Length: 261
Image 1 (cartoon, rainbow, N blue to C red):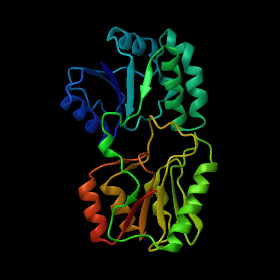
Image 2 (cartoon, rainbow, N blue to C red; image 1 turned 180 degrees about the vertical axis):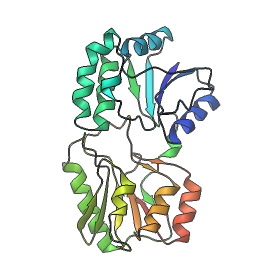
Image 3 (cartoon, rainbow, N blue to C red; image 1 turned 135 degrees about the vertical axis):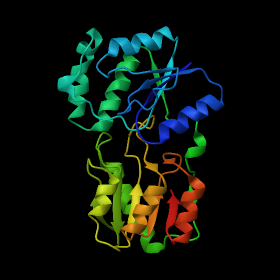
Image 4 (cartoon, rainbow, N blue to C red; image 1 turned 90 degrees about the horizontal axis):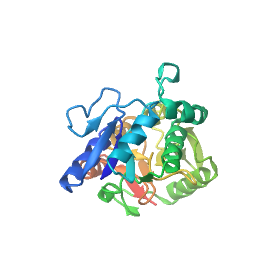
């Protein structure tokens, strides 16, 4: 039995479909904004403040492992209704929320660990969604591009694991944009059009890779084209790459390189 903490974006549905295909026993705790898993008979809608109810359900199902998939929005703490365990644990979640969204999930993982529940990687059942090292397109980065990529790698190795930054734009060995709390798309919109920069999406040093992996899909490549960037760089086996064939076809057609380091 596997417990699935599912939020928004397309990724959770891909995970759920694979679980069904593998005929694994599962249940869903639906943390999506609009209760998108309502029609699944194994789905439960439980507030993030009801830790007692969540933990009791996991134990009733004799479940030892859970995974997180998708975006789980930061709750409105002032309106949350708490059960006894919620009252006990919520202060640590609120403290974490001041650091960033990744810290909230990390605090929940720690709570589950305290209750004897293991959290596994979000791509445990979907390893095919993660690209290995290599160049995946006809267009490849040049020597100067590779120096810029190295600059970004060094930056990611220095920042805090709970920092919200998961993406940079680099050009000529300089960082010209950093992702803020509003995400990658907002960052790209602030980059000078046709900058010919490179989008780098890497996990941070010591980041918890069981959740919050950098995620790429067709929209990411469309944004790269829209804002005039020349390439995309990811970390080997530490990414979620959706719609691979469609994305790489788009990249080749538009002479955008995709490199995994």
